[in-house]
Image 1 (cartoon, helix red, strand yellow):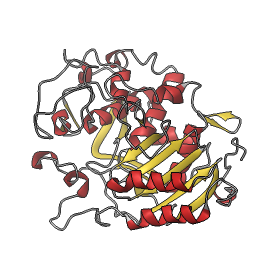
Image 2: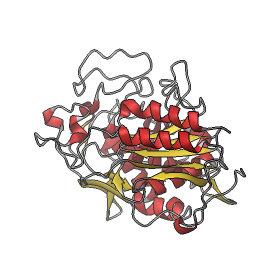
Image 3: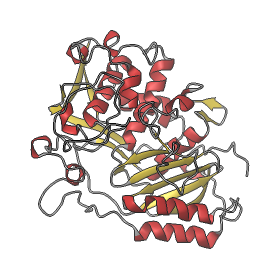
Length: 377
């Protein structure tokens, strides 16, 4: 199949029969049924019977860190789609429903950082953020040497409080670089120097969003819509929310700052078709047909492994290293991942994009395996 096709608008999205796209139709249906039969255990309401919001309960937030401070929306049913050569090969469920998508929002932050770099709003990834963002966030000795690369790789070790949440709320959540977790999630620990430890930490990701808002001088959803989503033909249905008190004050303007996920509510509410367009943009190295959307080289930069986690780049998950994340996916695979579970899988080797919403996380590799089994080339 030709690999240069991109859809111009939702209603004109070309389809391809499974056989023409290199799939066995029966096995592809098996993969879809696998997804439907492995729905997440998360309640559709997003609240557990005891009243707790599943976004904080799922990762074991301590009670003092568990307050929901952003909007929450009931989720839809499992849905998804598969692209090959940019064309729709399979689609199931309501792929237009603008669902919460949790940490997939982080991958959109990675995309926006590339635009800020290209615009000269960030001079270099290894420039100290304190040189670009004045104020107290980077004034302390612990935070003064943090660079943009540290924030994007989740190795910043930033210490402080943002939007009412301390960085320690996500201490020991997911760490890398040979670190040994000896304390429970949410227990404060001794800090490392910036750049020495990978820790998946939503407070620090929200800080990245606030810093990018400061540099653009505009709310990030406006920048994303104008520079990325509208040019690639995304719908008008997606939304990106922050918290009730999340604002950046700049030159007399009060700009709303978004969150990098739905951990405490907020984040991106978006449909699978729009996610698929973003995945296809990544598969096309930032090009949409003949139009360059992302700066040349930025996709590769996002997909370069961090020195302290070879499965993580700049806000994107990777599948390399000695212990691959998903053995059933291709080694070149990259992922935008969100709790729940939500996934955008991009395999440039297969020219394939898969979006799957609300699958049990333990079944994710099984879904990738089913799709690979259906692929005949």
